Length: 222
Image 1 (cartoon, rainbow, N blue to C red):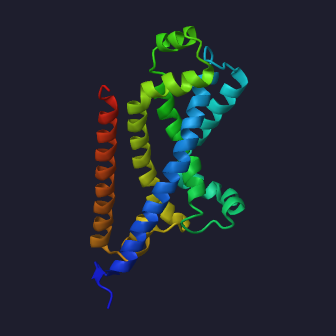
Image 2 (cartoon, rainbow, N blue to C red):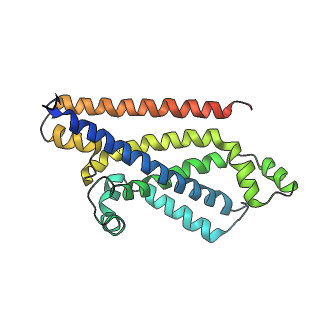
Image 3 (tube, one colour):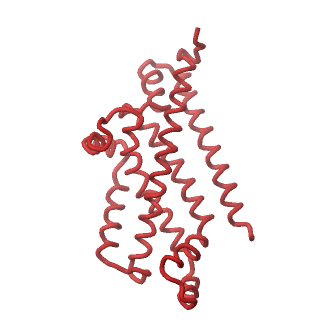
């Protein structure tokens, strides 16, 4: 007989944890890659950038601002047609990756953009003086100078994404959020609600510790 925890089977709780980790992992990988690329686009095409282009910069800047201004729960509902088009359905853990990625990518882009803008102009000028190409400047000067800061930015982003995965339960995405909604709030199961909060707090603490440790290691002189 399956063991129960606060009136819910342990198997369902484990499944909720796996679903949350799935959404968090893939959402962060895909959203992180897109976020870094968007951030590079913003930094490179901004006025005075290596590839200054007002049109591209304006499009990226406005798009990021628009998406970031929309609360995730509203974005989740508004993107249902897009989610159906991409995933074939608007319900399920995999389907919720669509709104999660669209939500987190612009958020990460702003954080990474701020990190990249911290690089002193003298570093770029020195690279140009040595005859480095734009790709070499990005690969060997711009990104390495901000690795530690970017890791902290991504850590902040993944914690924000964790909160979004909890809300994805409203969209049928499963996970800890769905567990709290279906078996906690609707069943008036307060102990279970507290238990889900504790799970999320533990997740956040683990992620923050890992992010801080990695950032600290990247800051150490080599």
